[in-house]
Image 1 (cartoon, rainbow, N blue to C red):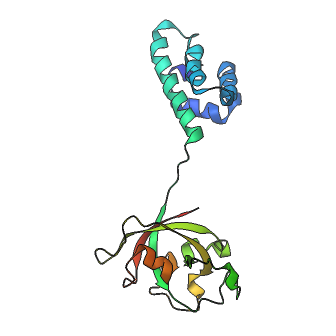
Image 2 (cartoon, rainbow, N blue to C red):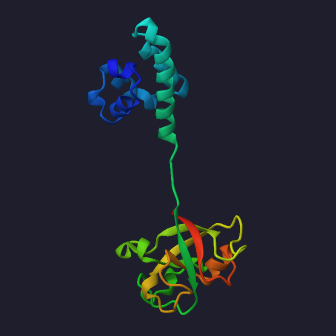
Length: 197
């Protein structure tokens, strides 16, 4: 328990990962944490620290409370991130596609779809994936429509689309409908932020 008392946060995290390496009283406490309310969780830090020497007690209570807070938040907070890339657009004809051949029923009725660039194609695993996309910038000012976020479905591979995209080598090629929902249609290339959903 000496490493834990000294405030070595890495030791605390490693005890979360490998409960066998942590002291028995801490293991018991962490294993049962899912059955405790937040008040019991933070109160538990005081119980564990009660066996500590008095001069370390005050610092340890604050440290354990902080560590318990971090642990508690890590259970309930999902950290996500977006990728940044580029998008161009394309129009009909769309069939056949690399994902679905001549099956037009796979296209969303909203016409919010895209072809995957090589960076997200993933040997065809991108087919059917849904992405949230927003325009973040472009060469010309006021190209992006502020606050617009769309959700698209990947239906094809950009490298093999039947119709030519407005620009080659982008992260994704949006349908004209999808592109116009987030940017001025006169642009051939925009910078986007996108996230799989």
